[in-house]
Image (cartoon, rainbow, N blue to C red; front, side, top):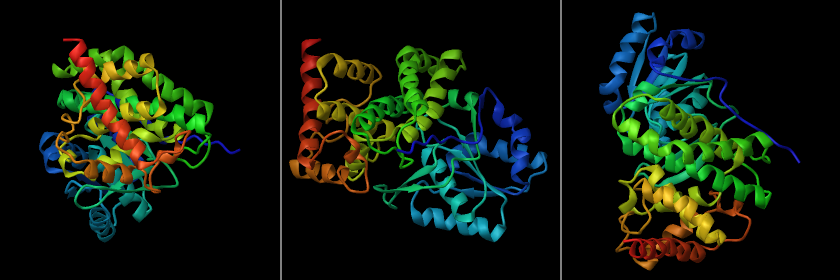
Amino acid sequence: MTKEFGSPSSYIQGNGVLFESDQYLKGFGDKPLLLTDDSVYNIVGQKFESYLKDHGYSVVLVKFQGESSENEINRIAQIGKDENVSAIYGLGGGKTSDSAKAIADNLDIPVVIMPTLASTDAPCSRLSVIYTDDGSFDHYRFYNHNPNLVLVDSHIIAGAPAHLLIAGIADALATNVEAQAVAQAGADTMLNEKQTLVGSAIGQKCEETLFKYAHIAVADVKQHVVTSALEKVIEANTLMSGLGFESGGLSGAHAIHDGLTTLEQTHALTHGEKVAYGTLTQLMLEGADQDRYNKYFKLILSLGLPTTLADLHLENATDEELLAAKKAACSENDTIDRLPFKVEPNDVAQAFRAVDSYTKEYLEANK
C-alpha cells in the first residue's frame, strides 16, 4: 500500500502580505503573467500591478473571462507563451486559481496563487476543476506538483462579502466528512494513493476549527476586521481544506455538487452552497444517525446555507431533472465511487429529496 501527502512548496498568510510580497516573488522571475478578472482588478489588482512594476517586474496583465474551461485556459496560455512569461500569478477566486494552475502546467513554469476570497479550497491543491464554457462540471485535471506558492492576504479576505466566507466554510466542512468515507472504503485520495495519517488529521483539525470559530469569523468579516478567529477560519478554508480534501480524498459531497452544476437553476449559487447540500445528501446516503446528521445540519442551517430544494432554486425541478443531475454525480469521472458502498443515481435522488423533507420537518417542529 502506497500513501502520499501533497502540499504547496510555501503557504504564507497574513494581514497586508500582498503588498509585502516582493521578498517571496522575486525567485519566480521578473516577467509574470498576472491573471485576474475585472472585478478583482478594480478592487486590488490595479494597485498590485503598480506594486509589482514599482519593484521592477514587467507585468503581462490578462483579464480572466470567468470560466475555468479548456478554451479559456488555452487562450491565456497562448498569451503567456507569446510573451515568454516567467510565472503565472492567479489573483482572484477559485476558478481563477484553477485556471492559473492549468496555464502554468501548459507552459511548464511556476504558479503563484493569490486568493482574494476564502470561498473555496482550490488554491493549495495540485488539481483543477475544469468546466465547460457554459459552467457545467467537465472533469478534474491533475498535475505533478502543488502550487509553488500560495499567498493569502487576510486584509483582502476581510474586505470581501461575508457570504463568500460562508461559502468557503461550507466547502471546508465537507472535507472531513468525505475523507472519513474514503478511509472507510479504503479508496484512493485525489493523489491516487492512500491516506497518510497527516492527511486524515488535517481534515479533522479543519472540522474542529470551523465548529469553534465559524460564527465569530463571519461576524468579524461583516465588519471587515481581521481577527484571530477570522485568521483561523481563512486557514481552515484555504490551507486545511485544500490539503485535507486532496490528501484525504473526495467522495459524495463534491460529486453531488458536480451533478448540480448540470442544472441551470443552480448556476447563480456558489460552489460552497452546492457542496453544503451535497454534504447533507452524503450523510443521508450513509444513513447517519440523528445526532451525527444534526451536528452538520445545524451549522449549515445557522449559516444560511441551502438545506431545501427551494434554497437551490429547484423547488419546481422534475424527477427527471433531478435524476439526470444525479446520473452526472455518479459519472465515472467523479468521486462518488469512493464511498464505502455502491451508489446508484436513484439512491442519490432519493437522499437529495430526503434532505429537503428533513429540513421542512425540523423547521416546522422548531417554530
